[in-house]
Image 1 (cartoon, protein in one colour):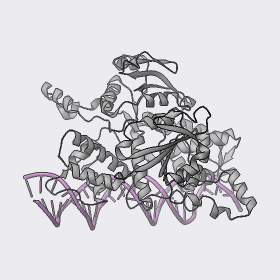
Image 2: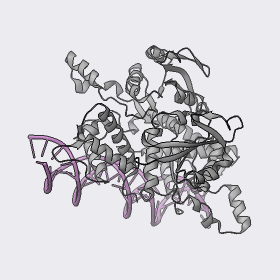
Image 3: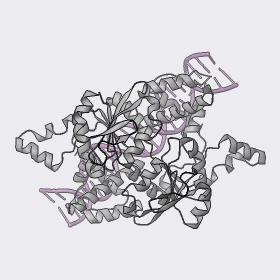
Image 4: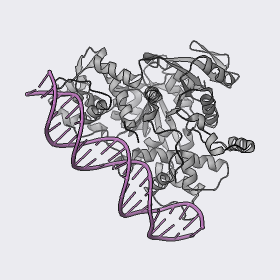
Length: 242
Length: 242
DNA sequence: ATTTGTGAACTCTTTCACAGCA
DNA sequence: TGCTGTGAAAGAGTTCACAAAT
């Protein structure tokens, strides 16, 4: 179904990062081979990934760093402002809020939310932590695009639902659980008692909502597996390609 | 090349988590259909994923929660102790060190390392932060299996190299850069001046080292892209499968 | 009757070879 | 000549249909 592979998008992010590095070093030209080496993929792959979105190079010459960078910024949607709320302001949420690099591309943290009385009202960066009950009104009033979810696992589904109900279009989920339109037992009971068509009504508000997961515990476990079974992983030391 | 898809391993981690939840709720049996629904994948997928590693169910009956859980723990290598060092003890490194859930499967943080004079010597959890120069001896003396890398991007490649030189077999990379056997300009110069065969010697110490990335900034950017291009993403609201 | 386990079909992704331009 | 862009081939991964088991 995906006419552009998901993996290609991850790689575009990597290429963009490499172009930024090259730019700070005043390198003005590059090539698919050069990018491929730095990104740890094949040069075919680089050219194919770029070809999904346009023709950015010059045959015989390669790519001009600032041009390709600009184009990738545009393709990835990083040439516009994104208003973001963070839900869950514990240690992880605060680390995210303070992590440098988010503002490079106009990701702006406009609100922080938590349930803990110890956190609500506190200042983190230049923002005051608000109670999660205020989320709904805040999202609507402030044109929030995305929510970053850094709550404990058992609160993740409810918090995600709150974000979706409030109208965010994207969620970056840091909690080690699957979030989505899955009906909780309670919700299903609610709906049934009203007599609605459960299958159709539940989860409809999730239509079009994008969820990306950043799951550190899962990463640990994959690492454990591949450390025990290194032959099942495409090596970090690939033979030269092209 | 991969006879077991990488994505299958990620899904096994998800299934394991679901089994843990079911166990705490005293649910003793499940099925591929049930697991599939909770994991957001198809029941075919669940059965195929499990089939890569064995036959864990009973036809007509389904799966016994504790048995399947035990088997997945074994398959993923989580029934043994993993000694872990964290390199980089800033806000992110500390959030990782304190994040609950790592110790559930015997991931033990045995050392914390940084370069900052303000951090070295400080207590985080029950450990004293050491200077990164002590890393090499420490890894060897303490049978360290893995390193979690939470340093700034410009220090990531060097820190990763230090981990690999010290002998760790796995790296969980939180820095938004590609780390690997890629020779830095300096290293290439070094090697060339010694007259060795650069191609063969550089990066050899990386052979067999597993790198897993947990890249939060990349997640943000993918989220931006898919929020703008939702039709390019396999929907969060899939039609029922099986 | 039900649900697993699995070879085969199918679909998606990557690799390749080379045509197209500078 | 050199490197990009791309249709076609090869390879992976997912879906399917059904045989096997209880």
